[in-house]
Length: 159
Image (cartoon, rainbow, N blue to C red):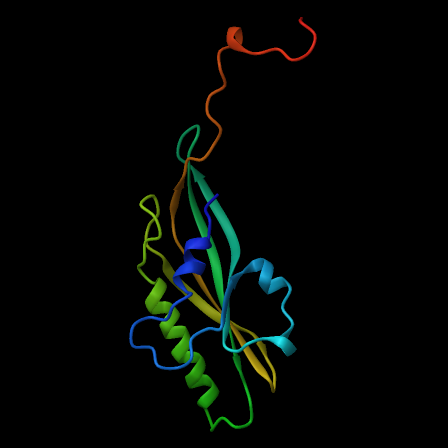
């Protein structure tokens, strides 16, 4: 299994030159599950695991492909000009893309790649958009070999 925490940390600060207000909240799936839109500090973003695929690479390793969504929430209010909400969303999506596309979070991982996006919710008050990203990484964090049978420590009755 591969942690998504480095991605959350990377999204905590805007890319160089980004002018609008950056995300007031960047968090993971647990915070997203507790979301209350009426108390949300816009703009905000969450990194939510979507799926993990794996291909065995031997007895104790696998090539994993975690897919995750970066869910972006912005205000959608009547004060925006025609098409302005889409332009604001696009600015945030491009900024996240700049931070993640091609970034390699760890030595045992391949660079992150963008897979597309979709609307999650669109109301008169807010807009939630999810862009999907993925990367490949080698998973080797399995338990080590057990000791030889004659070296086992018995805690119960002897056989």
